[in-house]
Length: 279
Image (cartoon, rainbow, N blue to C red; front, top):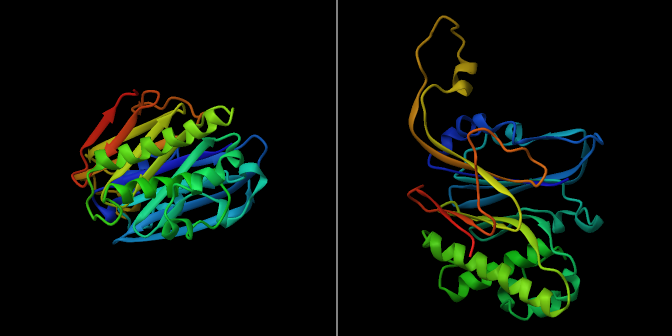
């Protein structure tokens, strides 16, 4: 099984507080007692950093514990990295390029039949950054190519609607190539962020999300309070964050909303959430 998680918030010092209500979505344990690897990327002060354990066979993975002490504007994590049996860091989500972080989960059956044709549409300076053979990394670089064509690749605060358009056009391009090769279209949940915006797309793949508009009494902070007699609220009224989960086996979570099929979630530097229905 595979799961993709993303986070985008307005206070890098409150990552743990924002993630705490979603900690069940960040915890993975399989009936087989083995989780095949994990990867975590985060944007911190404009830098994109990665932690990958593609060969980590464990009974459980707790992304909350891995991420809670980070100081970050955005996070993307994936649990289950055994795509096509290629368990290596080069083929493991998430991926990065300059200020951009990207992750995907789902299926792109027959991708090997269109890989060379896809690469023809990726500029040389982007193509040289591709390290592995996973469909996810190639779709990421196609997305970067669309951003480059739109003049958004180096923009610090790009229009998030235009960023989502680049992501949508990337997946549509891949589907056209697959259809032309006589192969079924992709089923993907995708997320991209540069720390100033975040976009997610549910391309025939289920995505749900939790929106946080302030915390009236922070359970994470209260748990650290040494004074059990202190009953004062620990509030973070100005905290704004969104947690995204793409996992076709996940239950519908209370308080979470689902993206419509082929819909998109869009957030900019203002942290105002917009949801677009599928075409």
